[in-house]
Image 1: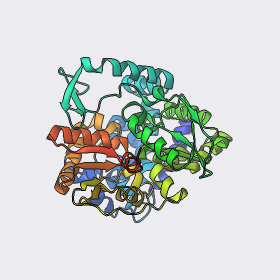
Image 2 (image 1 turned 120 degrees about the vertical axis):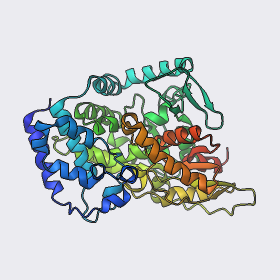
Image 3 (image 1 turned 180 degrees about the vertical axis):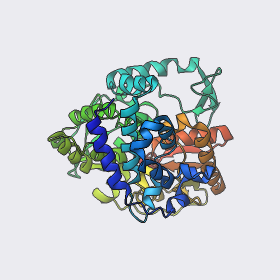
Image 4 (image 1 turned 60 degrees about the horizontal axis):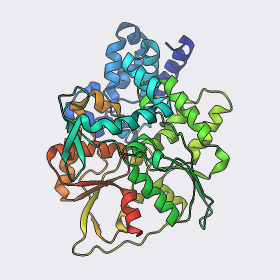
Length: 433
């Protein structure tokens, strides 16, 4: 249990932030969860009303408050469209930390977050063993998408179609690298993130190819840890801060100009969540967190805004393949990055970009939300799948590996033959061998 002084401080911070909400209800129109359930308790305004009495409710019904608070995708749609500028995600993350500190974590979450995730070397070994034996428990589901499903009845996988672990994670293919800045004069540190490392290593290869082609130096340290968002969204500040401190040691600020990621969620977490949850920590950790946060950029944003690329728009030929782009919530709503990936996609001569009706509507994954509320996650994801299907696209591009996991499940179960690729993979392909 967290100290009562810490809990009281977090509650006071929440009260200061919540007074900004005018209860206008604008969040209802953009909340993907509310669109499925129509429940006031599922939208930001309802949760903020609940949190106003958090101090009393925590003693009366902490489990009920926690369940309602965790029925949220943390997509940021409400915050991005709030006329009062309520920092909804900051409030929800702090509230979850308060509740986890008061109630304690479940044994399962404690095992996963503190026993596995917060120990990077052990977590790497565990997933490497998982990759070796996964075929014993899963079978192929969709050849085009390369998905698998449970071979036997499984409470863990259920009906899910998953993208299996890569046979060899990226960190085993390339443990570390340190190259000098080339013609660009810029050196980046590459933060790979768990999903790209362990499930989509081709995204990391494409990222490094693009950087090499544009003569950007790369610092890639070994033994990187998770960005910490699974721990932060569960309210586990102990595991979260352990992961952040580990990464601070792996990325010395004087070794690079930009901390680069190819994962929308990692970028948003390092840029936005790290400083908020370390705001009360003392010097020098708080300042190092802030400095690293300010150096962090998404790969598409880096190429266009920092490197100054201006790729010419190709004229699609008659046989150009239709591709549509999904805006990850953490990229567009949190960081304002949405034009950059489209500019890169339009430079590919063999593709024709076709926009869907609501490219920034959430895919419905929400990290651990999908594990706890798979039925709701599926309903939100099906709406998005239908938007993609209506375009007739044969490729779905996006900038977030977490969204890619959700789309693999939805398209595979629907029997669709739509390839799912990271936008940087497509841009790397356009640069030739």
